[in-house]
Length: 408
Image (tube, rainbow, N blue to C red; front, top):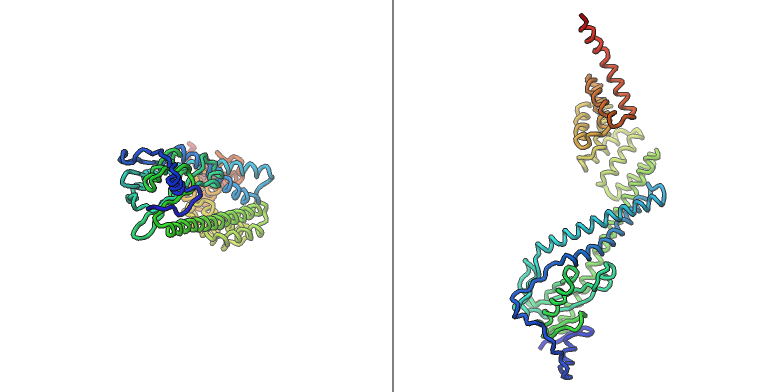
């Protein structure tokens, strides 16, 4: 005989009391034998509600952390608020779309839950769990999660306990992926098959042949969930807190760099790199500060580290090429600039450095062409005007000779 091991308002207990008092509820579910297979698939409306609720939480968290990192470069509270709103909207949309895509892809891959007179199958990759192997099931409302994500009705968690190879195996089925009426129908059918009754409410209930063993399994499952939540929470705090700290230090370095305080900027970039040694932008910023402090060997080394971590990074290529031009290593400098311009064809600094190489290597016509091109989209660039003037000056004598040779 099956016994109930725990639960407030447990249907099994109520069933036993009703039987003793002659008040047994005669309401019956449609017999499972009448249906060969009944499937339960991910419901688009349910997942949309879940995506909407979680998106607000995730967007607020991410936008808050990113806004904290932007404080050093913020000019006023108003601009900081505008940044927060922009970050929040972007994170909200990105999470909503990504969540829906991931969930429905997962639902397609895993497949639907199937129930029949012979048992239960949890998706394509799940084995058939026969009814006589199910030692118990528990249905638990999730009011805190439901309130946070604004889910109506409250989400439920269905836990199955299967006797498998002499041990109890457990499976969790959250309701928030499915249509509420369909999930409730699934619970009712499973209760009918496992305990022979229809539950009066979606409350915690467990049916078992061995109450003590099932109670231990149930409590162990609860401790396991708490441990997983704790580990994930600590991981998120460490990862996201570290990211916020790194970005805050990096933006502080940018603030002092743009203010011309290169020594202070260098200190902040170095502190950011202590937290994240592979932060490419901090290496590039540190290289730029070393350049302005006339420490060219350190600037070269740091720009090379930035390029090693991010080979398509344009700014380190341009800075490194400038130092190579000073050392008259025109071949390597030209190669770096060519690669930079493939990524950013209108990068003024890269184009003018390339024009400078052409001037130094005796190709003023190409330097003239490049400087004119820069002036088409950056007409007030003084360096472009200077290169243009130098190119014309070098070309002017040859132009006069050509005109004199053409005289009759």
